[in-house]
Length: 446
Image (cartoon, rainbow, N blue to C red; front, top):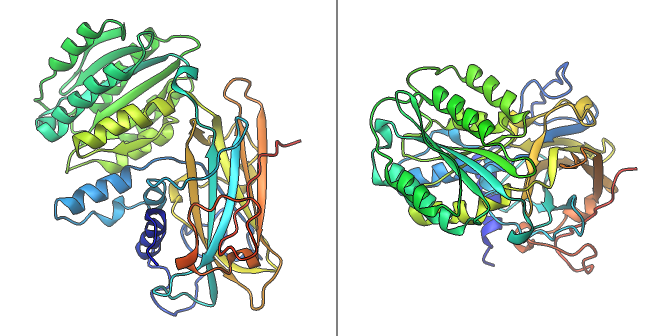
């Protein structure tokens, strides 16, 4: 049976994590004082720690960069491979909730025949989905583009790609939206202050004027970009700084922590940071950390069609928000589960005790976005009953009121064959013959 693309993605993640590459036993990491494992990415025993908590994340740059490297005939650096971003690059076709929160979908299956694992190990998928939004329903946008024009960007597949995508985006935005353009090489330069999209000629001239050369003062670019965004801040609109760069800072402020502090302060002022990475030599780690701290996400593009698609299809979906500081927590039943392992999300883990601490940063999720998390779950012999309960908590972007929704899954729901499982399984009450069980809930917290 031919697997659909999402199923292939799951197989790829299993391969990347080398799950079950041998029949050796499972070393279990000790729980740290902060409530999560000191050795992230290792199997955990529910008897010692039955909770797995992480901030939601919709980054996909790791997959895009790896795909670009492979297409160029080169292997991606293992340090740039983040499995959750591979999975989240594919549309899982989860049903949407009726309201403004999340639909929670939980399903799973046995491992593929090509993968071995200790004991009775199953794959558990947690899918979280927000409701989409029609373009005319979204708020106006005030977008400040901070564009790398250093010498390393002097390539049609870098700066040329960025210019093409910006022209395309200006054609798609509404006349009441606004765009500002800041560039940086040795120093930052304001090319265009915040300008209504109705003034297309002025914006097009600014885009066409971009030329590459010099070093990469990314820190100065961010500082200037946020200054322009603050000056052009539009109350009631979606205010965003969008960084377009290969992430190779080499002059000025190159210390990541200093840049991250700046981004965090500005994100707290309702100006989120989105990252678009380009270039075969790419500073993946810095771009990813900046976007996470800036309450945004980062993507990677390597061709014009892909860049246009991201700028026009995905970027508008980030201009509104469905959820602030969204976190997920999965509680595993020690009577049923021998061990569990979250695949990826190492740098998005949250202390278990902070799940309901709404001052602790989570993820920002827009309309129509989905988040998928995969777990390897080893069941106890002859296990039956509940395996896990999945909860997601978020703040309403307008009222800052907290809500939760939840769903649970039983051992029998993980018994289907992987090749027969439907990655887009959508029914809340599938027929008994269904190889994959999926449940959905949008129950607010009381």
